View 1 (tube, helix red, strand yellow):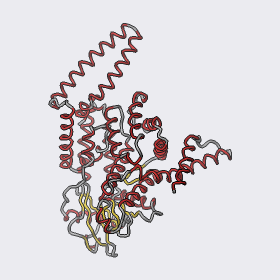
View 2 (cartoon, rainbow, N blue to C red):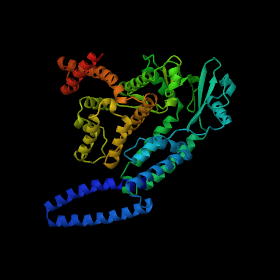
View 3 (cartoon, one colour):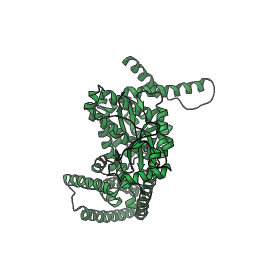
View 4 (cartoon, rainbow, N blue to C red):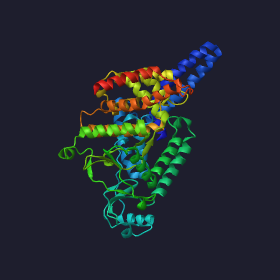
Length: 499
């Protein structure tokens, strides 16, 4: 995969190298003839290497260099990869899902195809599931539950779920981890680690990404997701964060029946958020459901710094009383206060249509690879954002913006910071749900009033604290950004008069 990405991304790297070579020639010319001759010799070496790489790529890709032919080839390869990742098992399904947002690493055709990868695999035998439950809970299946279904109601790569009832009468959902899962994933990661170490011998192959760092991050993430005790704690934290929200529900965790490999939670009945006809029969507006989901995610991102990272339709149910229930907290994201502050600054720049400010936000958020001159790529980013800022907010599609940004990131020396992978995946999924239930849905248009509300509350508190510290002589706790505060004041006025 590393060799493929290196060859596939070669044209984009060549553009950057040619620009740098022109600059090196100018600098050599200024130093004199000897320096110019040395640079000319290096140019010959680069040309020879270029020919070798292009011949190699021709042999591997069978010369499909035309734009249409290349696009068809990429789509075929992307479909083939997606199908075979499922066959390779849990580790590679999760890797494929993670790569489905990595426009900085993969061609857009791959990103789009991998984004559709569903975590659906055949269930394992119920006898093995019962044996796992008994071993984990240290009691017989009939001692643990008054009743339990013979067939699972859902199955995924890491485990499957059964409906059951406790002896105290509560109806519950029991999630059981697949047998030998830890050993299988550990083995896969060990094999991948050997491949990554081998790839490190070839700097050019490893140039496109820090494969070793990515594998380490993936291993940490998947082992955390496999720890059902951690998932239960995540659910409890999420429930606490939304304690004052009557419209959001998180299933209760039954800790007496929960271990690292068995999770028992409250069983919830309801309708999937994308089942439009069923919602309308219950007189529930899909538009209101979308608004609530967007508002809930803005709270998670901008206030809590802790968010559900996998909001696909199977993890969101509209309950009989109209509340939205969130499930499956194995995959969560965390946002530092510093990152929250930068995201808020980006929002101010969107509201103020500040193209230069948005480009600077990308740089500040570490979207550039180390050692790259930010000024060389700034015009490209500004051009992209200018196109979207010229549109009305309701015309901006988050998925299209993400894919356009992905193309820029693939062609130029950008990278996607690790903490943004989950954010982008969650928001793209959320927008997809909105568009299924309401063709007129716009994530940005829906988010705008709620984002203003959150920002006014958060930034207002910070502003009051800064003023208090300044005027009471308690020392500088931070510098007041008067330009930002002026935007905040105008936003507050518009919000007030729009009510």
